[in-house]
Length: 232
Image (cartoon, rainbow, N blue to C red; front, side, top):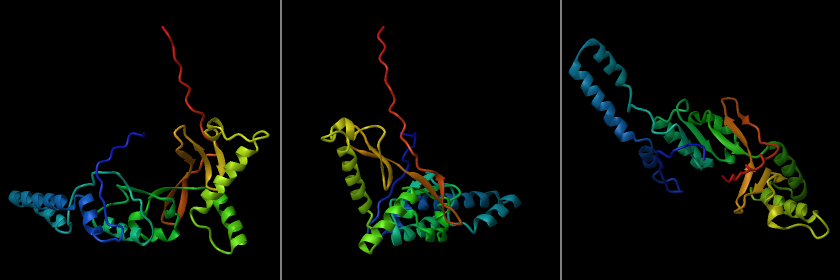
């Protein structure tokens, strides 16, 4: 929808086995190693001082070349994310050249310790509304809410909002898919005509000092585009 193209993908076992091989394949590491060896061989054939100096510099490299992608979506979290980030760094994924994209669970200050995570972006709900919900939940149940708790709360809040429309409430498709959407604990949300939810999320970045807001969550949705049919 925004002009991106998938240039590479890799799969790994959820238990973490074989992640090394998956990242190696994703980053085309063997091919880049072969490119390095070929370049060194060519420089040796030249044999001049400039070529020999270049060889000296290349001796410290394991592979050469850039990634086939400038952004990488990593739908992972927790210890497995840290394991992945270590291998990504080992196989030359450079945060200065490749931006990692991830999940709301990346809102974790400890991730700044992972070098390859610097500059990573992820979408997240507004902190203020979720903090309000978390405080109330802990006060009521003496424990932290699960990730699904806010979804359940928003579903009930939506039902209450629809009930307040008129004497009998309005649960029609028109009301549920109102383009203006609804305000929930996890931020603004609305339903598309096919029933899929759309959320207004903030874009966050992992910096060297912590997690910062790159683009705040919207406070309202844009109205749908109006199509005009003109007859000749």
